[in-house]
Image 1 (tube, rainbow, N blue to C red):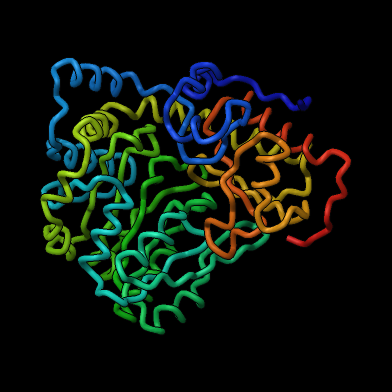
Image 2 (spheres, rainbow, N blue to C red):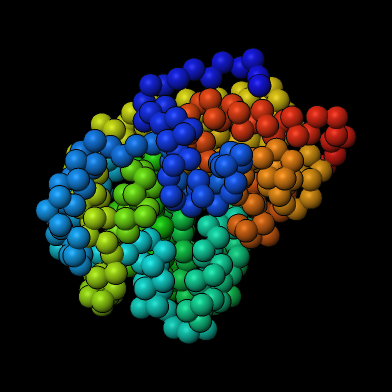
Length: 398
């Protein structure tokens, strides 16, 4: 353990003890043996927000577990987006989809053709690498630039990929796994390039509610630009309120993409879960006080993680994320090869998400989920450091 003070926020991240978490049946806590501390997949170690839990108990009590309809969810999201981001969108044009990845697949199937190129910034959310080729599109990796100040868009490389015949750009903002929030100036530059080369922009904004102080989420579709008007956004309450298993997300069109989103077949919408719709509607309507409390705890944890790494693993490169509860750790200087997560799983009993699964720029990196108590963040870093005790550290450059 370390002498660094971690404290307790008293918020959602401290509400559950290890025994309660190990009783869970979700993948985070069932993928590995009980002695492994999981900080890998994007689930949070929190109870549900009380209004959401109450709504779900009420729904189950009345047997309300049939097929899903969107109900008041589009209106709830539109009101939330206006309050939180200043983005005004028409709820009548929004369509229900099962989850953000399913929505991306459906939207790309509608706005591109088989064989078309889809540009994705890497490192990238691993399911992109499976689903985009599966629907017959070519995934084009466009690496983010890694600078001393963190990752940023490589606009020159993006223009080259657009000019080479890309049909669509799948933009993840806030970005998973780096936690970067792309600013308005960069987004306007993307919009200009997309308009110049006729590229459709599809945005994954699932982490938008999880932006920390000092950063601001700018919805791409809210920009004053022709490419923004033609864009389609995928949004969900699932990450910010820990609802991933309940299955509900939304496809939100820009002003000139309404016809495209209207083509989403009702069978697709019916793949969403009714409990997910109910929970998400309550999250967007009544869940902001809980969200703000959560963000305070996550903000404390991202700072705690930085202090712990500086003290116990100073070779590790860490840029505090501007959003999300995911830290993208540069572990190359430890000399553990392309997949350092494998070392820490075997030697430290700590499960991180392997960097290579995020594409070529992920070699030597791993993703660390700090949406847990400060005690468990501290233990995870302590285990990692202890596993390297007495081992020569490589002097590789970052």
